[in-house]
Image 1 (tube, rainbow, N blue to C red):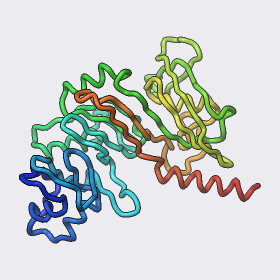
Image 2: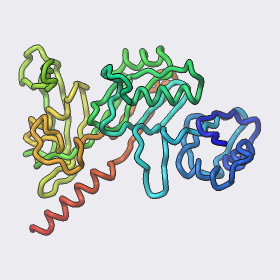
Image 3: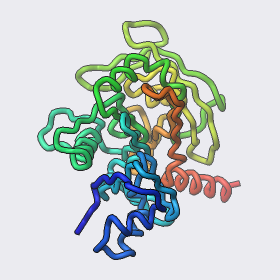
Amino acid sequence: MNNSGRVYMADRDSTLLQYLYEILAGQSRTSIKSYLTHGQVTVNGQSTTAYDFPIHKGDRISILGKGVMIKKRGGERETRVKIVFEDDRLIVADKRSGILTMSTGAEGEVTAYSLMTDYVRRMYGKNSRIFIVHRIDRETSGLIIFAKDEQTKQKLQENWNESVLERKYCAILEGRPQETEGTVHSWLKENPKSLKVSSSPVDDGGKESTTHYRIISSGKRFSLAEFELETGRKHQIRVHAALLGCPVTGDRRYGAAENPMGRIALHARSIVFRHPVTGKIMSFDTGLPNAFKAVMKEDSAISGRNE
């Protein structure tokens, strides 16, 4: 019997593995341990892999479905959306590149929203809902926030600039900007036909946009950059990187010539925000994706061989 996608309320104090053995009686101990090894167990919304994690009466223990979050030894197995944090009000998830945040209207389209909707209905009942708080581009991977109720969504959206204390992206750029750090400021406007975003140094009716950047390292062909958003406009980092003369690699729409990762090399790495209900400061950082590390390692090796 597969008990993944189930929620249990602890009726006594115990350690996590021992409690799992008891509530999942009938399954092999190896399969039960694998739930922990693969990061499929949360206690009160917090993921844990520790066998001896203390459980107290009243704690909520969730065993997540494999399609939502799976971890394995030595890294993470590729999934379309992975839960990073969950409580009664919010879900913070890590979206893979190539997945829309929400549907464009195409029938049967798989999106982060549809995957998370399936998840909450499987976990909490068929009438459960999820609400999108903000979006990132289809081509961008990384952290996005969902609300479990409309009130939480509205609180976050209405106070977004005050609630979000920090949002950082990492990207691999083609070439190296003249300055290793700085700020790009312009007005962005989307062409409704081409869907390409243009930039103007003066107010032309577009949306005012400000991006701060810092170059972390550079090789022969590429630079690893960190971007911090002061505003959040469509394609903002991609357009501003192109303005620096160093488009995000893989981003042919804005002038990139190379595509070493088979995708646009842009990742929403971290976010810090104030919880809309508890007021607690929440901080999440996925770290630098392994694919980014591999590209920069290879580029650095090429640079070293040519010196």
